[in-house]
Image 1 (cartoon, rainbow, N blue to C red):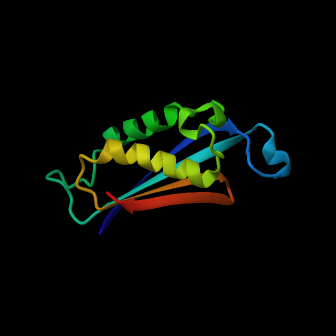
Image 2: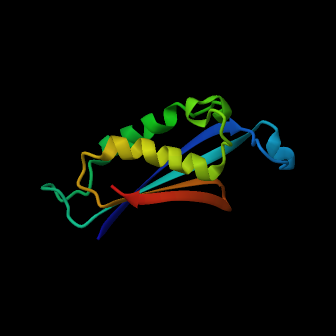
Image 3: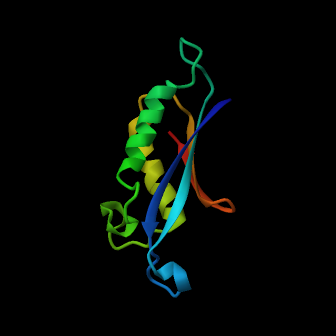
Length: 125
């Protein structure tokens, strides 16, 4: 099985809702790191898993609506707690729809909130 990983850094703000999490209930920023791992059993006719430039563009477009913004104000978080886990799933869903054209067998989105905390969502494509 081949695996390829791409990374993208971006910043966004949020505050947690629905519980008492101290300072996390107040607006604050994170420097997120998105890791996208793609897997497939075969390479294409050029011996690539995917076209990196194409996938980098899709990653950029997926995070563009969140970069330097308040996650709580984003439509995809409407009425929902903008947790790290949910954010990873939202990015996975977006990237899944963008990458369906590739012959991939699986995809993992790992989202780092800081150096010691990450969440991920994975699944078949």
